[in-house]
Amino acid sequence: MGFADKLKALFRRSALDEEAYDDLADLLVEGDLGASFAYEIVEKLKQKCRKDKISDMDGARKALKELLLPYARAKSLELDPDRLNIVMMLGVNGVGKTTSCAKLAYWATTEKKTARVILAAADTFRAAAVNQLKIHGQRLGIRVVAQGQGADSAAVLWDSIEAANAEHAQLLIADTAGRMHTRQDLLKELEKMDRIISQKAPDARYSKILVLDATTGQNGMRQAEIFNGAVAIDGVILSKYDSTAKGGMILSLAREYNLSTMFLGTGERYSDFEPFASGQFLDELIGL
Ligand SMILES: Nc1nc2c(ncn2[C@@H]2O[C@H](COP(=O)(O)OP(=O)(O)OP(=O)(O)O)[C@@H](O)[C@H]2O)c(=O)[nH]1
Ligand SMILES: [Mg+2]
Image 1 (cartoon, rainbow, N blue to C red):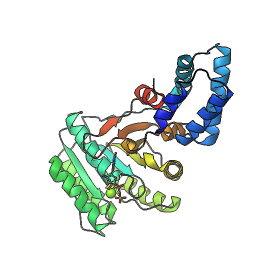
Image 2 (cartoon, rainbow, N blue to C red):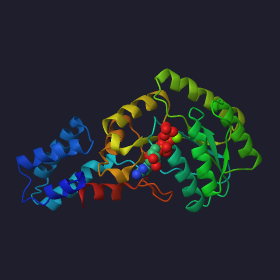
Image 3 (cartoon, rainbow, N blue to C red):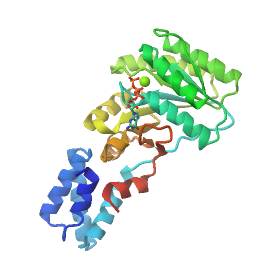
Image 4 (cartoon, protein in one colour):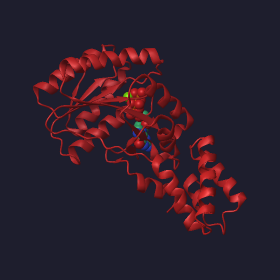
């Protein structure tokens, strides 16, 4: 039984007694809320049920949703149609950066009617990375700016901004390499990228998006700590949400690092990509 089903089953019990509260805390830990957060929420729920004289399970579930709502923080990616928007896709190895670049490009062209999108293959670390992005570009009919493997990623970014300026592009999405960075490495690399953007596209609207894999739990939290400590992250994409019913990481990210979620990746197709909606997310999480 998955996390959401277990939670639903718990709320089908006859009453929220001490045992049920304990089980709820265990379940929230399992759902990637992290132990201290889980116990804090359960304690608050106990108090709230006592104070508001809530004794039925439906009432308790609604109270739980109310307590979690401030942590289900959503942020939309605003695209200004009248200037260049630049998105830097960040994250460690294999989390879904390249796939998310392609999905974001698809979303922007289909949902946001962003006519001119460019993809930048700034992951020059792996040979296959450039090809992977080029294939997405071909399928989507979107231009990919690339150089060969081993090229300087900053040079690729430079080229891609030049192309974006020449074509009056509305959106430039840069794929980056997924090495596990130390804070120093990351800072240096991103400072270089920032410098190029402020030189070549000073009027652009620039966002840094961190991709986290929903299946990695506490590892994802650690990645968020490193990236968010190094640069100001504008928002998160939680990928592979289809592979796990546990979305608790989103709540922990808000609580620990004040991060908001922009999109959920929900599968392998381009259309498996949704702007994050707090209410719906919580309803699914706790089975309302
Ligand atoms: N089920 C599912 N799979 C996904 C999702 N997003 C990405 N993937 C898969 O995860 C794997 C890694 O995705 P990539 O986009 O290559 O990840 P990356 O971060 O670019 O990886 P590196 O470039 O190696 O650092 C691929 O097999 C993707 O198809 C998702 O939302 N759901
Ligand atoms: Mg990649």
